[in-house]
Image 1 (cartoon, rainbow, N blue to C red):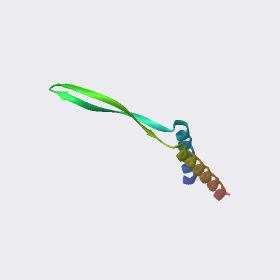
Image 2: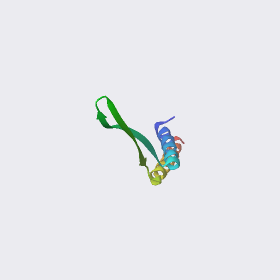
Image 3: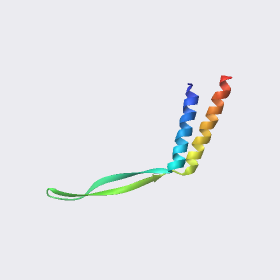
Image 4: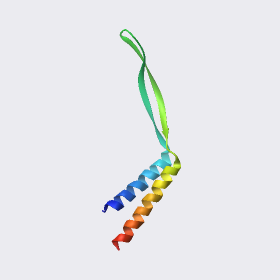
Length: 74
């Protein structure tokens, strides 16, 4: 496979994943207090939203790359 085709396929796959999940979340753990040998930790859930427009742009860009790579082979 050519590089342009591989990049096009990857862009389409990443774009579809972004359109489906619309971001990701993660949990952070930090120490809230420590008194001698006893420690208290807290967990905080954070999210990182990704706009659907980004996924759409990636899908369209991947399709354009796939079409362009197909035309240069002929």
